[in-house]
Image 1 (tube, rainbow, N blue to C red):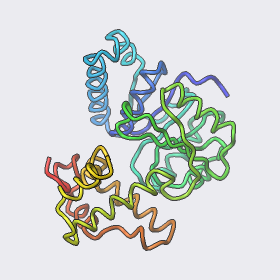
Image 2 (image 1 turned 90 degrees about the horizontal axis):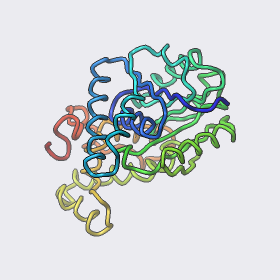
Image 3 (image 1 turned 30 degrees about the vertical axis):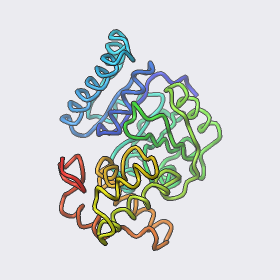
Length: 283
């Protein structure tokens, strides 16, 4: 395995730009790829603002911010990833789209390069099977907001080698993150536990058990959660929550994971949370 110096990140959304930022902050050359040039422009602006906040709070020197930004490049062409030493995919949570991407990455990148996915629920084994290097395909699930959250959930696919997992774990340490390993089951650990709670909160709201404020307030004041489940769902994106619940329901076949009808209706209406301006709350 070549020493990791240059990292490719695919997907310039909320997670992708956060992942690109932490790698650039940690001294890695980063090339961020997205099919939409406008998304890359927004990502650059978001990263600049985020690094600026660290400087304002005294957590980062101005010269280190400038150096991190200098290490960040971007473009719309996947072929530019021919020279990277490690890949993190952070595109839409759609198994078909991710599988097609991993097949392309397998062709474009060097055979020794690890291909990781930031997926929150999709099978790493399936993604690995779309390549000729399933031993070098793994899950690297960052938490949102990436620059602030220390956890990275590492997922070992059926064919992922111990060497690949060790490299990914070491990389997490270099990023200042804590890696915890999960097996390749739908939802892994984080979302297998989190999404049923969010789903149950939606059922409680739909059935009139409590108002949105009461439901969130009980979990904040009674369970010491930093934010209530409905607020958190809005932050994650209701469409993302629904997609993960569908993966859990389909993959495990247990009716307890059946998505709440209210959640499905809100997504159908385009009420996706913070990113659309309206979810369980209005923004």
